[in-house]
Every structure is written in C-alpha cells, then in structure tokens.
Amino acid sequence: QQQVKQSPQSLIVQKGGISIINCAYENTAFDYFPWYQQFPGKGPALLIAIRPDVSEKKEGRFTISFNKSAKQFSLHIMDSQPGDSATYFCAASGGGADGLTFGKGTHLIIQP
Amino acid sequence: NAGVTQTPKFRILKIGQSMTLQCTQDMNHNYMYWYRQDPGMGLKLIYYSVGAGITDKGEVPNGYNVSRSTTEDFPLRLELAAPSQTSVYFCASSYSSSSGQGGGNTIYFGEGSWLTVV
Image (cartoon, rainbow over all chains, first blue to last red; front, side):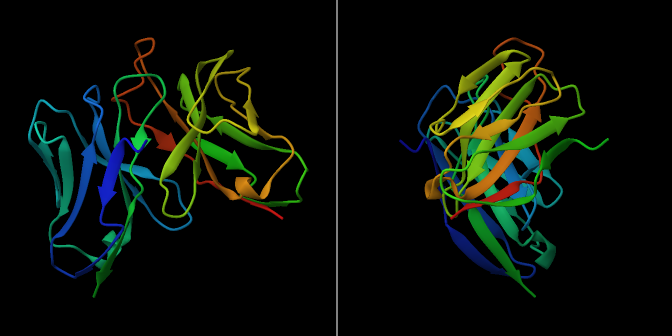
C-alpha cells in the first residue's frame, strides 16, 4: 500500500519557469510533510517542510501548498534554475519512531 | 562535523556472500535508520533504532539484520546476498526529545552505499 503518491515521475521546465510537484497522502495521522532534494550520487537533504496547521510555507523560491481536506500538498519552485535540477521526494510522518514515508520521487530537469 | 558517514561507497557481492554496511553519526542523534532506494521506487525503510540496544523492523527487513550497540553506530548486515538486494542504501539519523516521537524532526542522510549482487 503506497501511502504517499507523488506526481509527475519526471518534469522538464524552462529556466525561469515554475516547477510544480504534487503529492497525496492517505493516512490522516500524518502531521509532518517535508520535501527532500537529492542530487546524483548524494543522499537526500531536507529542502522545506510544513505542518497541517498552515496552508502554505515559503522559503525563498520554494513554496509548499497544503490542502488538509483534500489530503494533498505540493511543492512550487519559482524562477526555476538549472541548479534546481535534481530528484525531489515528498514525504510524510505521523510522529512515530519509524521516520518518514516517501513518495516515489520526481526527476526535475531545468533547461537553460 | 562529518554528519552521517557510510562505508563502503561501492561494493560488488556474489550471490550468497555476506557483508556489513557501516554507518556512524557524530551528531549525538538518538534515532537512526536504514533505507534502500531503487529506481523509480523512492526510499523504503529497512530497519530503524530509537536508541542504543533498541532496533525494529521497517517496511522491507527481509534478508537484513542490524545492531545498535552505541549511539553513534548502526551497521546493516546482509546475509546470503541475493540479486534483489542490488540497490543504493542510505543510513540516516535524527534527534527526538520525546520517546516514540520521531516525526517532525529533520532526518539527515549519508551519501549512500551502492551495492550490486551478481
């Protein structure tokens, strides 16, 4: 059972455009929703995270939008740059000791 | 401050061989994890530990074993390697101040260990 569904699997965006990645979850006990960024040959690193008590969180060019009733959240990358090219994972946690449940990842390519 | 360090970076195993992936962290984190990453499948939890002497199974524990004798170290043992264990393995750690409350805390990952079983 896939508890966090992520789309699209891959995404190509022109430099300066907006990249949008979507995730949906099933478990209503989830209360922490991070996004991780992974460059080739490296481990994932935390990019931005949100809790369900707010509908949006912005850090620089990165914004998470959260819709609790729809059980969906998304990552928006404004003014996308070639250096943003990476794999992005959404994840969710319900406060248990077993860490995060990850989506399958989105391979983002920003074309110059 | 090295963070989470994994060794080896790359390894080729023959079917039926055994090996241990080493993981150590210097952040004094109480929680540690092992994930495997397969193409297009995201990261799946193999085992986790909430402190020295305590380990528990994750989503995909079959074929693996772990131990946690110290706060810093969390080795992953592969017994009787199989081609299905060809993957990239990530060790990770986090800190939680409340027992059983691992969520909401940043998880820090190592750089990964690429394992091929032939």
